[in-house]
Length: 102
Length: 220
Image (cartoon, rainbow over all chains, first blue to last red; front, side):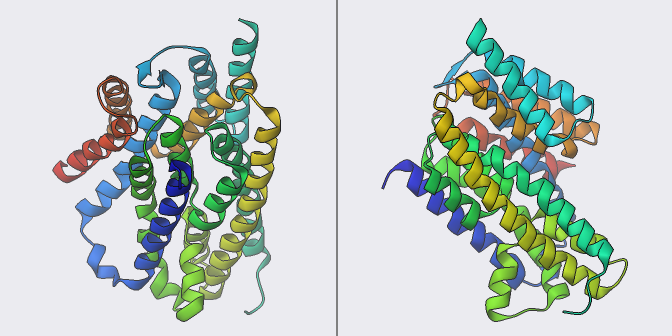
């Protein structure tokens, strides 16, 4: 089994365990406000890191290339309150244009 | 199931279609990062949680190992468990129905259900099931379309898919950045992940930022 299959199956199994556990435990177990705050902050940290790594790195090296242009356009689209598909497509078009013609 | 109010139906359908369409971005990102069409579809069917799915293909795509990919995706999946805690006493289902309810417990189904709760209990339950099944249907359909499309395209970079992936993450992140302290955490995580990339094995710089979030959350 290669890394792709392990990741696919492992992620799926744990995702379901998390969901089902939530449906099976008493509500008052998770009333701690600190726990809830941590839970709200973790996605912010992880998603930011994923944006950074996917934009600025390639095979453990930091580099600036066509992807930065694409993601910059995505930031602009988000500031202008564009819907999600517009954000993704405008980033892809910009990036592709620079990759193919520069 | 009693009669469904048109407002519940409208909310559920519009959310299902809009969110389901993101499945194209996931299917394309997944294939662009080396997953097969079958693996991409299985992730959407079985994991069925957008941020976790993007994370697992993102970490593997960045060269990370299976363990850091699974760990990152699972941390993002914890909130579904919390939604389960909120929804279980409201849905009051057992056995097979509880298994199905758990699988479709995500941001959207919980959100629509809690939004409809103001009207009445039936609307809340209908909102949950309709949105859960609706997103499930469209998300999987569009994942297949995106995965097949990306496979047909060939070189992901020539089509800008290598930028579409971080742009999609950014789209998921953006609505969460309401407070200045949240923005500061985002900026810190970005710099930390970039600075650690040459030093740590791939995948670890991403998962390590979770500890920044934990430290910040416990201190405040």
